[in-house]
Length: 273
Ligand SMILES: C[S@@+](CC[C@H](N)C(=O)[O-])C[C@H]1O[C@@H](n2cnc3c(N)ncnc32)[C@H](O)[C@@H]1O
Image: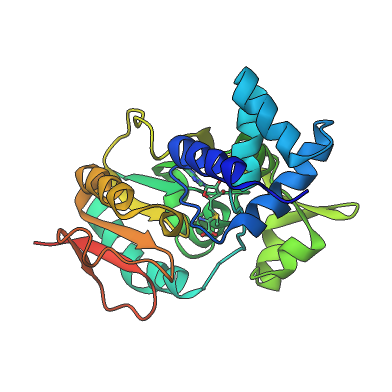
């Protein structure tokens, strides 16, 4: 049976309240395609029954699984490549020079999904900036979903996943083949600490960051939520730090304190002077 307007409204309000994700009218097909397998997995005969159970019981486990089902976890290694080129060629050299006295770097990758993005950054650091090996590099990656965080912490990827964006020399150097999967090396894995965090709920204590990646997540949020997140990041970013947004995202018209750098297609911002 198709999703009723009332069930769609319930799911929409639920997902917006819990995760900030906006489901516009017309996205009924998306809700159906995501919730049908979840309903079956949880033993309900239909989405209507799943929604009725959620309305009735407020079961935390159902709630979590529904939110996770409605998030989009699409990611790849070195996604869009331009931000990683900018990081290597323009952002890190002066940043490392400026931090040489303290030998400390703080990096945050928000909405890190299954880990390909923070691991891409960690591999790039290992490959091109070996001096950082003896520095105190505090690298935290966060996501709303415990399911993707678990996969990220395991650092195990299918052949299909490593085929997407990962240069073959990185695969050979930083992964170990385990049967049909590829496991990221312990050295890279231990450089990133994965933590659960909801961007629309109160934020935990964070240090001042040199680099913040929050890519391909704000597209799902409304304007007020984007503004609130950018304002929060503004307070956490060091004056000479950099913010990376996704290719389809922008801070322009949202927060004038961020100025876009001219590194081609990198989605890279600095704080206005
Ligand atoms: C499309 S993935 C982006 C992954 C990676 N940043 C990239 O660009 O490839 C979006 C991620 O945002 C996470 N997410 C969605 N809403 C969130 C929220 N309110 N707080 C934190 N993470 C959220 C999802 O769980 C998902 O893993």
